[in-house]
Amino acid sequence: MPIRFGIEIPHCPELLGPVAVRAEVLGFDSVWIGDHVAFHGPTLDSLAALSYVAALTRRVRIGPCVYLLALRHPTVAAKLCASLDVLSGGRVVFGVGVGGEFPREFEACGVPLRERGARVDEGIAVCRALWGPSPASFEGRFTRFTDVVLEPKPVQPGGPPIWIGGRSDAALRRAACVGNGWVSYLVTPDRFRGSLEKIEAFAREIGRPLDPGGSFEPAHVLFTVLDEDRESARATAARYLERQYKQPFDDLARKYCLLGPPAACVERLAEFVAAGVRTFVIYFTVPAERVLEQLERFGSEVLTRVPDWVGPTAAPPVAWRT
Image (tube, rainbow, N blue to C red; front, top):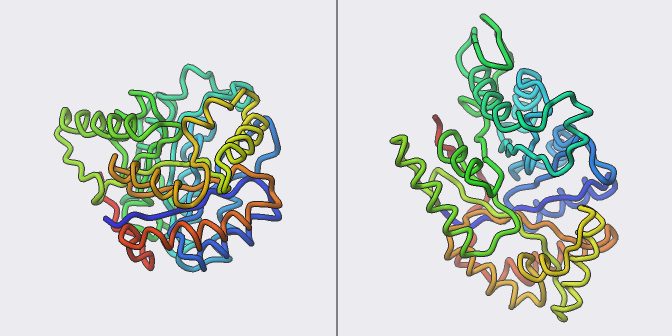
C-alpha cells in the first residue's frame, strides 16, 4: 500500500471549505474532522460538516477522526453514515472511538462513562447489520430491533470501512477484532510499532488474518507546525493544544508533534513509515489564519520530498470486510 496523507480540519466554519478544496488540489488523499457533542470550545457536528466537504470535493476520502459512537444511538448513526456515503459517492471512512476525555458530554447525552466501550462494540455491530442485507434484526444489551430495512444502503458494499481510534489495549483489541484500520495519536514511532504488533497478535488469537499496509490500514494523527525554528514550532503547538485540551502541552508537544523545518519533518515521517504507518492525518496546530499557509507549505515542501512514499490517490483502497 502506498503512503497516503490526509488533513484534519479544525472546527472553524470559515476554514472548512477552503481547506478541503485546497487539500484535494494539493494531492492529499483524505479530509477529516474531529468529533465531540460538547467540548472545551465550539465544535461542529462531524457528519454534518463532512456532508459539506463531500459537496465541495470529488476525490478525497472523508471521515470523522474519530466519531464518538457511544454518544449516539447506533441505528441513527448508521443512517447518517450511510447517507453520507451515498452523497459522497462511496468516499466515507468511518473512524470510531470511545472518547471519555470530556465526561460532561457523556452526562449531557445520558450515557454512563463506564459503558462507553461496550456501547461502541455493540454500535459497530449494529451499523454493520443495518448496512448489510435487509431486513436486519439485532438483539443486544443496548439496542434491539426486528426486520428493519435501512435504505438506501451505503455505496460501499457492506458499508464504509471502520477505523478504530485509540491507544489502549482495549482499543487495539477492538481494531484487531472488528476494524478495517487503526488510528493512533500522541505516540512515538516505537510505540506505534509495538501497538501494531499487539493488533496483529490479538487478530491471530481469534483467527482473523490482518494485512497491515494492505487491506488493513494503520493510520496516525500528527499535530504539526512547520517552522524553520523548531523551538518556535514547539511553542506554537503547545499554546494551541493547551487551549484546546485545557492541560499543559510543553513536554507532549516536544515528544509527539511533527515540528520544525520541512526536511526535519520528512525525517520524522520516515520513522513512522518504518514503524508501519500507511496513512498520516496532518492536523496543523496553529491559529486559524495560519492553517492555509501551513497547508500550502506542507504540500509544496513536504509532500514533494516524499515521492517514493506517496502513491496514487485517485481512488480509495478496497477495504477488507468482516
